Length: 571
Image 1 (tube, helix red, strand yellow):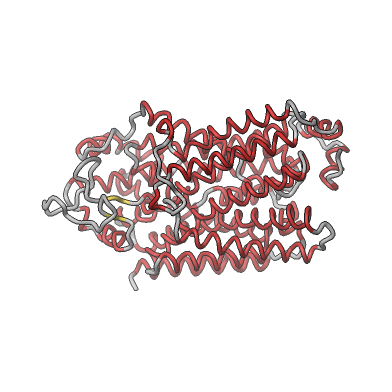
Image 2: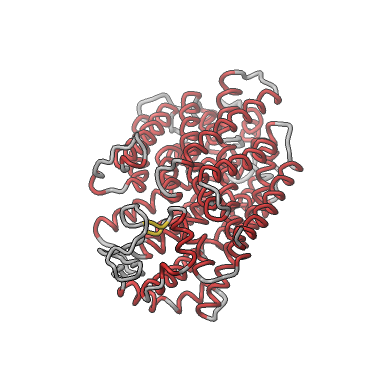
């Protein structure tokens, strides 16, 4: 066992032990605790849990890799801008009003605001979005375990499935919330320590947000020498259009993600929900302002080694190539194709190495020559990020099935014990499905997650905004809009993604060169149009529901809102 594997095992063992203990200590026996932690989580803790739920494997593992390994850093920043802007939109535009509405889940809101048909469509959307999103987390878990513990990806995903199933099923939202507080602490420490150390080592400035500015000029020179585009250059043409669409999809998709929205129901009241959003934004900003620096430093080191012909002689290169995450340009094993005695990492013809986006953050301590304990800490942080988000997503699936389908539609008289049993069984099924797809993912972690954001934008965002801010939005309009939006987005992915990634994909040319990860914004616009148009010609909500929608938007707890939050008896 190498030093890196030993330290990884130590940190993973310690952190997993903490997660299991916290979940056991927070175990629940009622549905309120399982779905929304009893609505009693303090704002700072809820903010940390939101941040952990928010910063998935895509944020921790993939985002810096996308920024660094795109043709230029500017194009990769769409993920940074989209995810950050989307959280602000969610916190300001939707979260307080949804919290005041007082329901457990997004389908619960849709069902009470519109009708039962809309609820069932919302349940299907929530399950599709959550399963898609959790696939990216499981894929990230497999990457970490395969590299740092020497097991293959399948075994790594199975280990991740087992641990997240244990604490998610045992503690529900209450256990998940307090576990996520711990996981946020682990992931942010694991992200920040290497960033500060690398900045100090390269620039003598220990604050990476300041230090990385010192290397940009030299990084630009290395990019030009090796044939890459200018690192900080803006985009034009179809690339500019796709960046806009991707950024917009991520922004509006963020505001439509059910596992983040449900977090605001765990706060004690509307005021606490607002403060939770503020705390979460602070916690998120710590990582999101650091990610571009991690990207710049890692690419600086990689290009420096490539320019001197030393890239393939570095130990980290061989270890990641051995697990298949550094390959030749056609996916084959890395080889010296031009016979110059070196492996060339170039931005054009002649490139002999393709570095997977998902390894950059995990490999950055090794690339910078940091000691083994820091490498092991980063691995534990990546697992914390992936598992924290996976648990929140699994809870959305289980609560949608148990609360919105079983309790609301199949067996309204079911007691707490039966509802919890259904919730836990549905979570188990979801874990197995997510694990299988995590072993065979249709893309790297951030790409899979981007599909989930597209689905969220195309399905939930319009019906929630219109449900809150337009009292005459009808059930038929909402149901039609959600259905059209999610079908359009899924169909475009099936149409355009390469056929070799999965049998269902067709690999056809994109329409007007629009990348599939940005199509969710277009489908969202269609959803708005369909919802508004259908609402003009269908039965309007009851007068009492329209009054409730008016009152939800204003401060204070009216009798009508209070009665609805407790019983759902409106209209």
